[in-house]
Length: 136
Image (tube, rainbow, N blue to C red; front, top):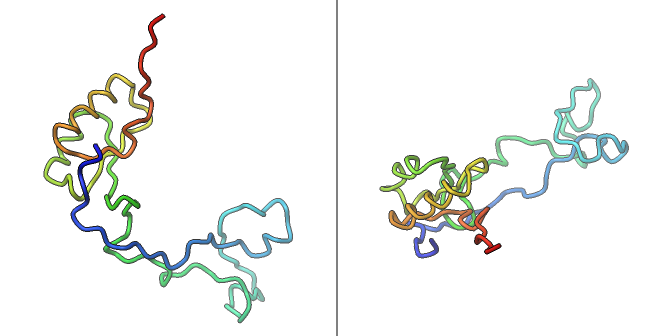
């Protein structure tokens, strides 16, 4: 349902959008795309936070508490597996939007989307796994 708008849409400001690179990940192919690991060496420049070294993740990079976990459409997301799960979003349909779980069948998925339209709840992945039946 596209008609439901979020209660308040604050601009989401990310302090950092790039991923933190693992120390010396540019030197070794085996760790080139690996996730962040804290350097633990006794002489490490990154661990000692020398000027010009790679930045380390810290609490200062955290997002604003008011805009944390908010999707670009302005809603917070709640994973829904059945029609009963939708009922708890009834009073919060301007703050939360439903996301249908990936393991839900197309029959139940259709019921969830139908009920969400009645309750005016936005479904973020409403078009997923819904194909019209072909006449054979």
